[in-house]
Length: 235
Image (cartoon, rainbow, N blue to C red; front, side, top):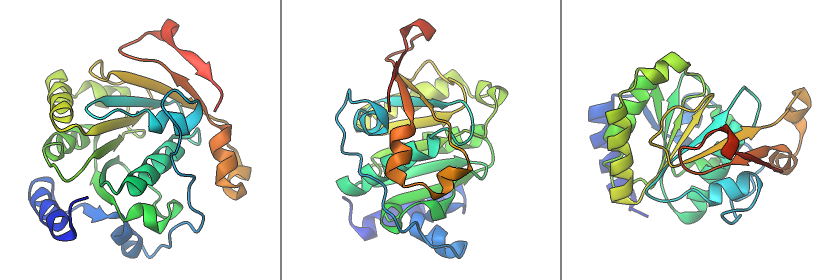
């Protein structure tokens, strides 16, 4: 893990290019007067090929761009993000989140999992992808997440294929991992794609997180596959 001074210098440099909407995760809590979740999320201790969210996050590969399709709200996308942040913290790696809109509920995550997070607030999908392209050059971050679940299909179509290709090349050169959360598939450049589904109601607000993780179903595939190449796995 880079030391604190190195990380601060990296953030200072990124802020010049990306603007002022960059916060460390723990700073976000203070900014909005929130407290982090008291209950820690289960660590992403699965193995690649295992079913469910643990297997999905454990199987994220360095140097690759992965899509996770979450068709609607309250269907498990936030749990995927939580598991990834837990993995980054356990590995002592820094993660960067490009957040389109206002979907990131910082108070839902444990303080300790926010310590290795840099949040970048974005007004549009194109702004987020452009920021991703800039940040992917920085060697201080191993994990990049673009949460575009609030983006629409036409927003994704506005992104030039060459931009995705450059991001994919940067990830491959640096051995960093990129994850896209979206409502629909967004780019053929991604080598892995998964579908996450769940049926969470209001009762989920009071449920143990371990039970929420087990309620999520993950459909796995590889490459730029079609519908026939997907299969359902119990979460």
